[in-house]
Length: 561
RNA sequence: UGGGGUGUAGCCAAGCGGUAAGGCAGCGGGUUUUGAUCCCGCCAUUCGCAGGUUCGAAUCCUGCCACCCCAGCCA
Image (cartoon, rainbow, N blue to C red; front, side, top):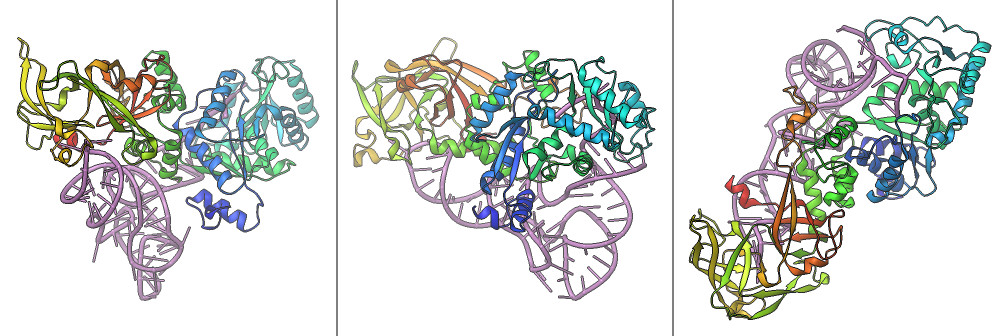
């Protein structure tokens, strides 16, 4: 156990866990992450995963990965596989603790019988619509179903026949018998079981009755010996039902439920329904579109799992509604990538530059460190020659004050190479700049001694034309133009806020040749441009496609704005 | 209008009766062959509002206000 266990913890849930351990209420903490396999994981799940697995790890306990598969018509094995892969990718492991709610179907059924025998549950023949009517409203109490006082023996028999498949979907449900006048609507005889003649991805056709969330979840928690059942705020109202079930049933453990606020990140959405809509409508490329806050999307985008974990740690855990700025996520990503990404050079918008005093036909090779602060990452050889590509925006014919880059007659350092001076600007008939003719100072080659130490205001990146690898770069921006696409004050639909320039494909980029060897998933910092990752899907051997993970902080651009 | 929650800086968030941590963002400065990184400094006389208790209140009490969640045989 580390300091988290004895310092009181970092958030209110960890404090509770620490207290429970200190007081001896629990000898060991057990948590669980219980996703429903009806969709892909997203950043909101990441917060819950980090919380549950994080607490187990910090306090020396266990965390289950439990697939909450109680609704066969919505769930699919494809999601199960993706969830498993996603949690692993995030960096967590559950050992032998991979479970499914469906593992407990028999036990769940027995609990239902237990409830019926105790007169705490009954089989109701009301239709779904009738149940809704009888439930009352937020401000008026409900009324009892005509079946509410059905004798125990009859309930038992009907429930047996429900299980035996003698009835059609919707003909009967099993309901808890609690209080139709309860101010908390969840206590107005909630449904426990419904008939669903659907094949289940794991249990096949063994069952035609399936338990509802509250019932299955509470009992699964107890069966697994969960000590702290952590969920989001919208389940706060369900806690009395959770407690009620634990009170009625003979179960091996008494878990407690705690709620925290779900994650909201500005300029994006996490609603399963809306994400699916974006995909179905073709507004994004798929669940792994790099603009999406899905685990699949963020992975493809190049967000390191460590950065995501750091993000989850920095945002904290509270019960407050919040809206986290994208800048915080980006800060975590830059932090991580700055340390791990080797540097390279790539020109996004190439402008030809000719060194007029560099011998025709000559080429050389210049060493360049892969990381300015980590010599152990080694170095590489950069081809250099008479013709180069530089970034078009690194030259201005009539620059503003404090422009440190190239200008007519001005000098600039070519990163890892020589200092050059702009001698001539070549334009086409339309007046567009087509080429820069410069001279270089042979005495200023990087690392060649005192003469090379001469200072100039700016340093720019470049790629030798004779060895350049032409390639595609993809630049991403926020997917939406408003902070809360799904709750904009204007009331307009979230699809109306899609940022038309959230994806920009740059086809004619010039990359330093070493980048041809980039393996899918490899990170680089293209100096002065940003962090990039070789795309896992579209890269080909020798011809990688790069995704911009996030740009570098850019105080010059900021000053210009 | 019933029930359940939440209000500390632009965004997060510590704080648990002893006089407002930290991070992100922002601003200013230093280092720098990335306008990056790194480093230094600044950034809440005040904790939704109003009263009260107390020597002392963001922390306790009372009232009010604002916002979020709940009426699936979804989770």
